[in-house]
Image (cartoon, rainbow, N blue to C red; front, side, top):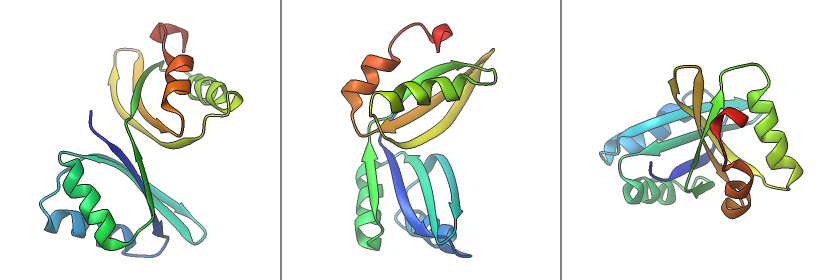
Length: 132
């Protein structure tokens, strides 16, 4: 898994399309993506096949963004699993920059999370997947 980018967009019609077009024009293929918005602020969380090209596009657009190496976590597919893992991160003072569901395997959900303190998050999240 490559770099996970979280980019801030305006929450207006066409903002995500404009950003996606900028990536496409540079030949950047999106591997995983999620987006949303509330009020005036929108966002996109994405991973691509070419981190350097994605970074160059982001810099050229002037859009605010953060990036990091995602930590893949396997959660049991049940109510409360996401709440439990994010509560553990929050209690340790670890801020989540982005979180993507990247797959499912049997009764598990795979999420890729990017945080402000990777070492602290890994210490919290490492362990048997069934426990999360």
